[in-house]
Length: 105
View 1 (spheres, rainbow, N blue to C red):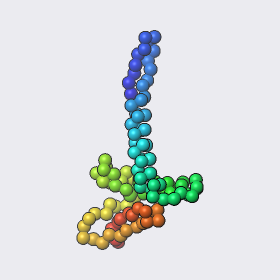
View 2: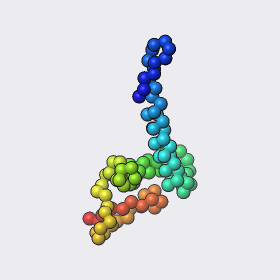
View 3: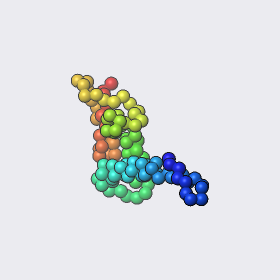
View 4: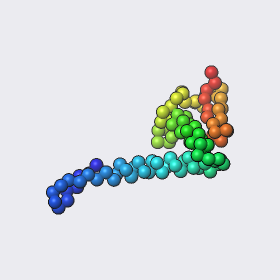
């Protein structure tokens, strides 16, 4: 946050930097949702769209790997499945549009 001093001596806060960062993050999320979900599904109304977006949000925050987080989800709700010799289970999300993987018990 930067303080600018105009000619009248008052200070004005310039909050553009955090807002532009947030706008970039939202823009990336919208593009991700669009390419991974809505471009591949036929949406039948607001209720259907909200249900799909809620399920995708759970997947995005809880299971989907993120490059900026070294391929870990932001809020993991399970232990991350490793690529070891153990058996891996596949769980379909959004009717099989996306798959999640976890170690078999």
